[in-house]
Image (cartoon, rainbow, N blue to C red; front, side):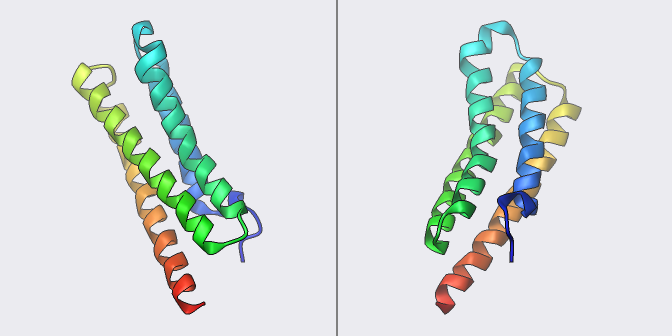
Length: 123
């Protein structure tokens, strides 16, 4: 049994995604400070934050709800990566590495959600 959200691989990889998103944000133009930069950072931070909050709740149903919110934030980050690419704000290599991490977090989230749904169905 997991004693802390910090033991969850999905949370650890989501923290790595935050680092990647912040690294990309540093390279964005100053004119995006209150737009794209802020939104990218908030969405990225929301992913591990919601995983942590869900893990800290007393019910599997609540955990699943927060994982769903984390998945929505992950989709936002993905959208911001598309915008950054289309605007030419980051190199393809940088974005490819970030997207690989984003995909990994998505797969891990899906796996955890499947596991928790099965657990809920058995209860």
